[in-house]
Amino acid sequence: MSKRRKVLVWAVGISVVIVALSLLRLPTVVLPAIVIRAEVVLDLFGFGITNTLLATWLTMLLLVLGSWAITRRMKQVPGRLQGLLEMVIETVYNLIEGVAGRKWARQFAPIVMTIFFFLITSNLLGLTPLFGSWGILEPAEGAHTQGAEAVKWLNDAETFGLWVRAEKLEEGAAHEELYILAPMFRSAATDLNTTIALALVSVMMTQYFGVKALGPTYFGKFIAVGGIKRAFTRKRVGCMGRIGALGMGLIDIFVGVLETISEFSKIISFSFRLFGNIFAGEVLLGVMAFLIPYLISIPFFGLEVFVGVVQALVFMMLTVAFFVIAVSGHGSEEHAEEH
Amino acid sequence: MDTESARLFASALAIGLGALGPGLGLGMIGSKAMEALGRNPEARDAIFVPLILGLAFTEAIGIYALVVALIIKFV
Image 1 (tube, rainbow over the protein chains, first blue to last red):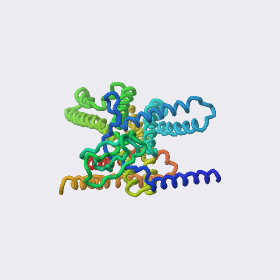
Image 2 (cartoon, rainbow over the protein chains, first blue to last red; image 1 turned 90 degrees about the vertical axis):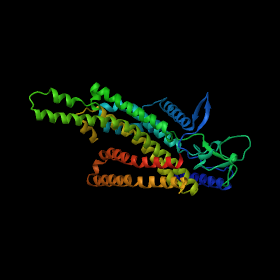
Image 3 (tube, rainbow over the protein chains, first blue to last red; image 1 turned 120 degrees about the vertical axis):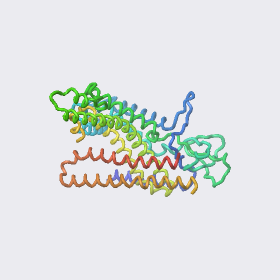
């Protein structure tokens, strides 16, 4: 009981300090620019490094260091962190095994769980306080100012700081003085490049597992000429039977074309689902925090934490489901879709 | 109507109308899942994965509308 009270006192104390600080208006925090394209914030030997790429690297670093630190001294009786990780992995693995079955789960788990852990880390990292609230002030140009709060830089020489000390400008101020804030880090999934890369990995691995399970016959799903071949080579059927089989063969070819298209549409739906959810979450949080400050955005924050976890789970489960459809042959396709 | 206000209307209509269909669909999926749970509470684990997949597919359509609205507004 006393421990809980202690936590409560700390939480209330920290909130009071935050609200007091923001009332003092020492650092003016401005709404970061809402732009769909990731902003280039660093220049590395001529390559523009975007803020989402920096966040991706940070996520990778956290995952590698975290897994190294936790698995460095593994024990038979796990400690706290090892126990937590074991619990998470076991739950997720059981979920995969429930869909893919015992045999395939062992092969699917490494790739899909990597996707899951990457996404859950990057999504939750994007919601961490102070993650996206600081950055570089860039001169605003034309349409670039749309949706952003244009600010005037108050400090002299620096263009870099933890908080932006700046002042909102009135409408119609001199154009050279307008700046917008490009955050230094931006959640990795708010860049369409990241999500398309993940979607490509998922769809490519679907083909890989399909070929691995069925061999070259896997591509018979896309180029379905088997029905037409059967119509000509089958013996002891009359003319009408042959025409009927030919018609069925043509339908098969059409279905094959549809299968091919659906394979490409997977890339689009995977990437836009993730991008849309996370990007919209960031916009929602930003807009809510600046529309009605301090307390109103807290429920939305909880919602975004939930969305981040669910989107990681959904990306993983959809990938597993597509893998399962790919590895189960033509005959047992109905069975695979039941899962 | 000038271009700027047309863009505002377009993005509002894109997400407003685009959220109608997925909203109905999500409600249907949720209600059927609850119904199934009520009839057979032991089937909780069996229902969970198809439920999540169905929700994801349906929600994706709403997300397309959202992305279109954002593109109209900010690009």
